[in-house]
Structures are given as structure tokens and as C-alpha cells.
Length: 421
Image 1 (cartoon, rainbow, N blue to C red):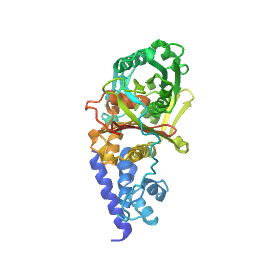
Image 2 (image 1 turned 180 degrees about the vertical axis):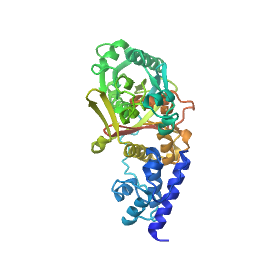
Image 3 (image 1 turned 135 degrees about the horizontal axis):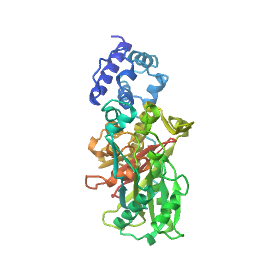
Image 4 (image 1 turned 90 degrees about the vertical axis):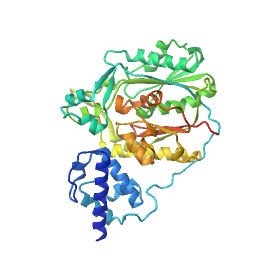
């Protein structure tokens, strides 16, 4: 068998394995089969990761060899052969992460409490499929989402304030002990004065700073990054996320409506303190953030005449980059602190859709039950996804643990909670 024929056979085996593992519809897959016809975007992410592992290169090397154009299995095999890539020639598909030593040995911050505020109204996947004019089971199979949460008449600001007060009660703190309020939102319920509006509902004094932090789905990590530094000025810092995408994104037939259907409404809060205020407080050991604006066009929000705001996503490359980036940030954070990924008790992951956390677990070689996300039950909650997943956990608290997210821009981040050292 020629090298190119061997590559084709290997790609076919890997593609069939991916389709079977993800439980997608059984279809005949041959050398001339086009990827778009036999596997969806998330499945294709998994397929490329397997191929990269087997070739001993990065996923980026596979993309470059193919010219970022993926037609048929035979075409990809020819492109890999022309680029000189072979199966099993290198030891690992992942280059060793560039690791910088942590700048600070002491945690510097403690997660005193976390609270989630989910809307009462839930919209089922079957109702969403009907609005999208899609067949029964489409959203469940395509995005792994069973339902999403909607404010639907509830006051999102009041709900956010209740969530914040619940968080303070759990932490054993009064409003007088808070020095700063950091508010983040990808789809805010009001377009201006969001932090001030919540500040007023919480009854904070004028001396309590109220800041708004961007970062889309990475916003909660960005706010925690800022809060960790503000603790040096004294007092607790309250971080609050409130999301209301249902106010802005219309669910209707077509790509923009299908993208909108992934997102749900929610509020979530956490309190960070310089010293543990409760017996269950967790030390926040480290936070790292990253940005690459060169690929920001993969996710765009545009104003369309007569239609309002529409969300556009380049699904396969966006999903592929999100899974890979979260996995890399987890590996790098673990290595910075002398940990192996296998030592992590849990990964709390942002889910762009309900299937992404399982793909992340597979990429990290972790049991799927160690990667926590609520996206399948709530929809993509944007900046609130991480604290909601943590607040709704059913497993006991164990460390070390990493929170990770990727957001529009593109931006990403990881936070390590570790009681050791």
C-alpha cells in the first residue's frame, strides 16, 4: 500500500471512529466522502485532534497542510502526503507548553462563596426546534442542549441583586464589608449603567466602586483577575455576571437564529476575600488570561437592517479553537504549578454548546464526569457559565481544580484553585 493510500485508510478509520463515538447518524463513509456531509462541526474538531495526535503534530499543522480547506477524505490524505506528514512518526501531537513560574506563591485571594440565579422559565429543545423549523431532536443532537433558561418577564437586575445578596450571606459578609462590585455581561439587560443599576439595588454606599468588565464568555475570569488585585486595597470584592441574550437575539430559521438558540439567560455571583471567611473557602492560587484579536472574526455580532442584532459564528474553526485553547490553558496552568492534568479533581468548563465539555475531557484524557458544565441544561450562559456550573455542582469539593473559558475576541483564561502549598 502506498503512503498516500495508507493515509487515506487511516483517515477513514479515524473518521468512522469519531462518528461512532459521538453517536451520530450511521452513514457510509468512503474516500470521496465530504466531511461536511458525514460529521458536524464538533465531530470534526474531535477528528482533527485525533489525526494531529497520530501524525505527531499540532492541529494547526494539519490545517496549514490542507490550506484550511477540508473537502473529502481523499483530498485531505493527498494534502497531508504532499506536506510530508506521516502516521506515527513523532512522539506527540502537542508541543510542550511554554511555562512561566507563578509570580506569587501565596494564593492572595479566597473564593468565599458562589451563588447562581437561574430564571424560572425554561424553553425546551423541542420548542426551539419548532421555532427554527428544524426536525425533532435537531438541537439536542447538533448542540447537545436540552433546554435553555429565559427571564421571560422577570426583572434580570432584581434577580442579579438577589443572587449577589445570597452570595454575601453564604460568605458571612455584610454589604458594608464589600469594597468593590465588578459586573460582567456578554448580553446585558441594559445597555448603559449596568454596574450602577445593580449597585443601587444592593444598597451599597457611594464609596463602593462599581466597575464593568468585558470579555464576553471569559468575562467572569477577567473580573476575578481584576478582583484578585483589588483585594490589596482592603475589603471583599463582589463579582457578578448577568446575561440576557434573549432580549437581543431572535430565534428564527437560518444560521443567525440557530446561533441565537444556543444562548440562555442567567445571573451568578462570587465573593473574593483576602483571607478565608468561611470553612469552605477555596484559595485562588493563580489566574492567567490570553487574547488573540487576529481570529476575532470567527464570532461576530452585527446589526442587520430590519432584523436587529444577529450573531454569526464560523462554527467548525471556532469550536476547534475553543476546545484546543481551553485544553492548552489547562495544561499550561497545571505545569506552572507542578501538576499533571490527571491530578485535577475537576475542570469547570465554559460550554459554547452542550457537547464541548465532553470533547474537552476527551482531549485532556480525563473522565467526562470530572469536567463540569451546565450548558446542556441551561444553554450557553456566557460570562455566567463557570459560576453556575460550580454553584450547581453535585460532587464534593476537592482540589486542585481549574476553571477555564474561551470568549469572543478571541479571549481565554484559566483559574487554579488549589489548597496545597
